[in-house]
Amino acid sequence: MNCELPPPPDPVGNYLPLTRSGNVMWLAGVGSRLATGEGIAGKLGDDLTVEQGYEAARWAALNLLSRMKAELGDLDRVTRILKVVGMVNSAPTFTGQARVVDGASDLFVALYGDRGRHARSAPGMAALPGNTAVICDCVIEVDGG
Image 1 (cartoon, one colour):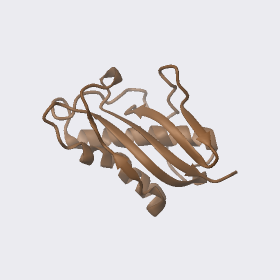
Image 2 (cartoon, rainbow, N blue to C red):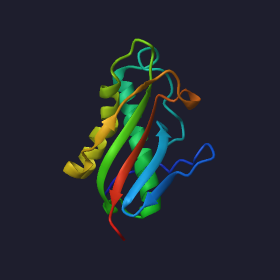
Image 3 (tube, rainbow, N blue to C red):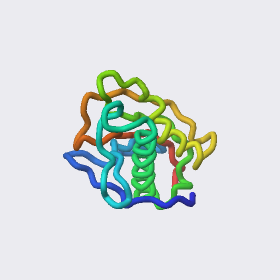
């Protein structure tokens, strides 16, 4: 998999960045942090547009991919993206969460084709840590190596 990735983010609390059982790996949530280390912050519907939220979700997915690569050594070892949860920092009347989280989903499908298609949830949240725009976590299947 040829993809320019930011450095993997460190956990910001008392938890593991990922856990694995057999060929299934659960990745903890990561925010919309750019390669520069800056985060995309704000509430969708107040501070940010759907397009900006889409980009934030894309960066969250890139951060997940960075964690995958750090653990697996090679993103080609990912055999399937099983589930994505994209939590969107949302103003009370904002209802475009699904379009925002497409930023992550579209990236996984672009990289993995049908193996990147996944089950998904895209809840709106009243607040997220650090006022980050989007946090995504995921469950993946990996080869046995």
